[in-house]
Length: 431
Ligand code: F0G
Image 1 (tube, rainbow, N blue to C red):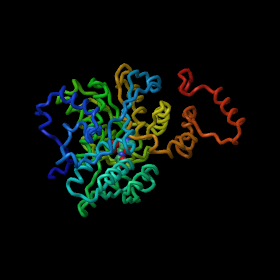
Image 2 (cartoon, protein in one colour; image 1 turned 135 degrees about the vertical axis):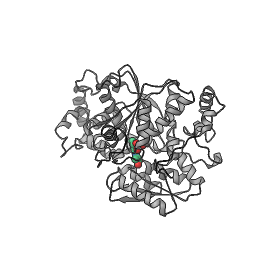
Image 3 (cartoon, helix red, strand yellow; image 1 turned 180 degrees about the horizontal axis):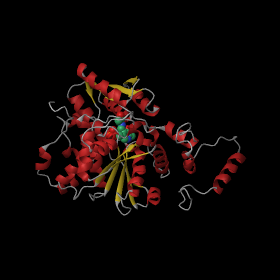
Image 4 (spheres, helix red, strand yellow; image 1 turned 45 degrees about the vertical axis):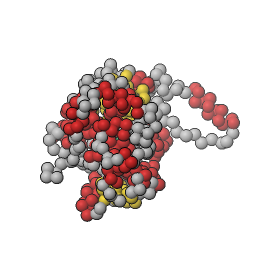
């Protein structure tokens, strides 16, 4: 490609399609009642806005998408935003939003005749790619930063049969190496710079609008790492507006961890004109990325929708994750930046309490058990600069209690707990 930029798929037939917005809505709704293979996928159900494979039999699907939109009553109380929702992409087959893109990209990889697919990953892409490759009879090569991804994500790739290489570098180093590799070896790269991935990830936004009866929220807040997901959601919103599926654009805001804030700095220090890379450090390992590939696309969609871009601290991430857990929902640390970011955008007056807000939760709670256990045991911030301030999170911790196996011990513990105020009780000072 002469311009050296990332590929993007646009299909003029989407605009000139003879199918009206209302007909599309009713076709997509009717497919929810169908048992046909493609219709069971919450991605391929929206196939009118996706690239078409040569034949439906080519599609590799694990019934991705169709993820729940939850209300967050406790977070509503905490933030004062009464119409607050979470679109939980962690409820996908491999536990993250990556599956929506992977079904499309893996399908086209197999159709193009590739035997090997490959990715660099902070864990979720590799888990998803390995699953779809296995499902589609392809082999997969995973490059992950040694020691910087959660065991739970790594173990998924192993079980799905990937050739897994833990490289002594960070995510950005893995991605650089992969890009050299694909020039030398017949492997197809499935990182989010792959445009088919982004097409599949668009369906998150389509499905969200369908769940809101096509009444767009005022704000959608999404975590930012390599910035593929924000780009995909933004692309979907602009296409939906073009097609008359929605009457106006929600503001799309991207939140990063303070320690991995390349996009925040790119916008603040370079006006979005060139990338300001950073040396990333955060316990939200999924977004521990310093050189995001899709930064230009993300800048475009933030500007086109009038969204914001901000950063949150490690303490704020941990607190928000525990609060989302206390809803009976839970998510992985990277997803919790959305709730932490919402609080910040409210303080700045960018989001108003009477507006409708959707947080995109990108990964399942079970994706990072080490983080969760360390948080509840009080070890997460031990020997870090945040150790002292982390005392304020104590009321959100629920460490396991080790007891003798006697009725008396359990009853005493129950009685002690009964005397303590319920942590989600709004009258509780820390609720
Ligand atoms: N949330 C989770 C749980 C993720 O795994 C990622 C990215 C993001 C947010 C950020 O999304 O990169 O599209 O801006 N994970 C990639 C991976 C990098 O390899 O699994 P993004």
